[in-house]
Amino acid sequence: MTVPGDHNAIEKELTEARRQIEEYGRSGWIVQEQLGRALRALGRHEEAEPHLRRVLEDRPEPREHWEWMAIGAIHRLLGEHELAASSWNKAIGTLEAPNETERGDLVEAHFLLGNDQQAIDVSNEIEASYRGRARAVADLARARRNRDAALAAEVADRFAEQIRRKRAKVSATGMVSLHDWYEIATELRDELAGGSA
Image: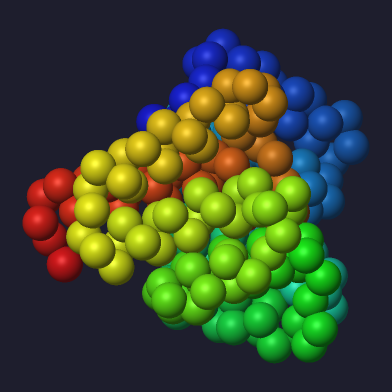
């Protein structure tokens, strides 16, 4: 999957992660995730896989919802959809009385689990000042529910613009990143445009 961004900038992220590994030996999960994500963004999936697997091995057991979201993101990158779903369900299970920011994460978890109406409903409950990414994810839920490739394309464009504006690194760790959301949106756009289920 091609992500928006400068190929040279991604190569720099890759070089920096490798430098840290060389300097410190087998580094912790954060650098392994940076390396895995940068390699994957460059289309080098086979090289990325062992680094992403080390994230799952080295990362402490999740306790907070956002940690479960992050673990689910790694499983998704590895194509382990059932394990990703299990992690996202655990994220939802840790949110008993979510605040506005956590509701945004709840929107994301519901979308990732295919619970489009719940994603939309929770998004509608969030105060306008907190919506941000949750609104875009809710729009993706609407696109999937209504089989609207044009809306999915528009949301992908919004994520691409956020990536450019924020100069978001492909190697961002510990979350479902803007680059992940761009990839998810473009995959949905392509699926809907091709008419596949």
